[in-house]
Length: 137
Image (cartoon, rainbow, N blue to C red; front, side):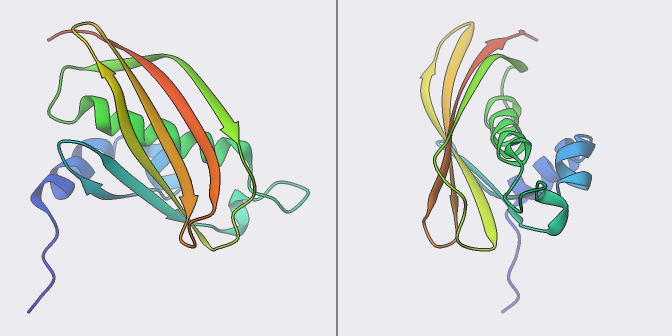
């Protein structure tokens, strides 16, 4: 039996492919979309490393921001971030990074999300907290 891709992922990939930095430069892929959460991931490459050999902080932030964008805009009222904070917890031990959203508050005009970033070994590498403002339709 052939493995079929979730129709929501196919639709979201089409919409969010316009986010060229996340999808083309950073090569983040959408992996899961449900009512409760969005998960995206990337395979760590040399282009993601800083001069000291670690992963650039911007890679973690881009992953968190992209997860937030999908979680708050896919089939929802258009939303932009108003503030974001990221806490770096450590370097990944594996070769992949995953960001997964957790909605803390979803109000009429604002929202608050956490994006937990781990590697495929379960290493906690970053935690982002992002506020959003809903723009309406």
